[in-house]
Length: 180
Image (cartoon, rainbow, N blue to C red; front, side, top):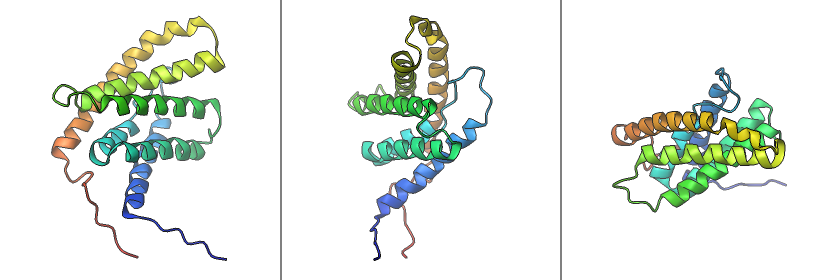
């Protein structure tokens, strides 16, 4: 019995973009961090680009595939690290879904990136408090995580804005795929 799975050009595009985001996540995992949980979030640049060019549905797919496949590659699938990553991604995507309705004249890639970074850390801190360390003492770390979210959210937003304005060839709206 043979199972044929029909794929679309959009499936191929999402797979390529997710692979790029997964590569960035794995690369980022080897960068030493001053505190656990503080990372630049480079793969979020891909999510923001996908959100802008292909919409929320594609951005959700890329983000979920990045979290799941990245955790499988790093050996953290279903660990607390995976749950934290997934909760941060979910909070970030929910925030981006809501932020899409803000006036684009005032809210661009940089502000969306900052909102997503703050939502990511808030989602993670909520899971830490509700599941791992139910103690108010974790709030003492909030200013450090907020500063990191502001810094890395700003940098990632600036990179995304630059890629959106100058990098038309980075993520073309329609990608020609080779036919099998």
